[in-house]
Length: 208
Image (cartoon, rainbow, N blue to C red; front, top):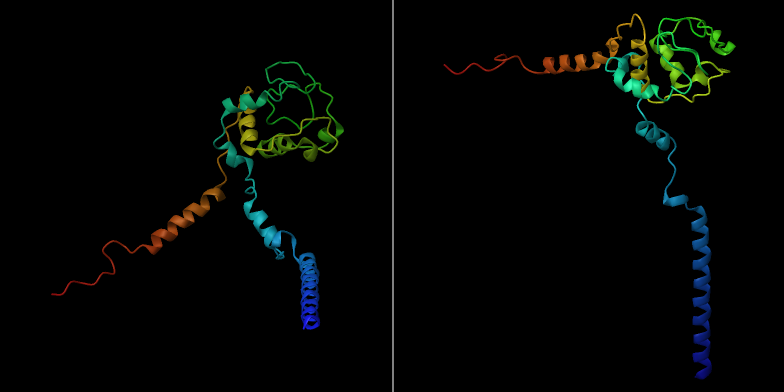
């Protein structure tokens, strides 16, 4: 009787050990197969989410200039004052004097030694290319001597350009916002008007 009980206990113990070992092995296997953070990667979802959550595409600088504030631009200009001044007849410093900048040839004149990278761009300074330059001088003119990293916010660039425009004998009128920016709103209003029934129209006549 004791031998039989011992045999049963031994088999039960062996079964328990085997079950425990199998549990450990299977747990390790499935853990190795489990994606990080218990989530499966669905191709394309992360990219779409990142694009949707990212910053909106930047509009042309004319859009921001339409509401630019030269007084705020004067504050932004303080970042430039270590190398530039914008006073009439002011001297060149580490950078050229910026009086009357808009409309001037890019990288030429004022007795300043511009880099070949900038002087070779051609054209004159106008709203959009000045914004591109202020956003990233190195991207606008690779090889430029200007070490300023740039202004990433278009509102800051617009305010600064509005301020620089005033530092001139003949400031230029700030451009209006591009017409295409107003088009979606106009189209939406037209659609709403078309969907709404005309006042007093298409109603059933009262019974006579």
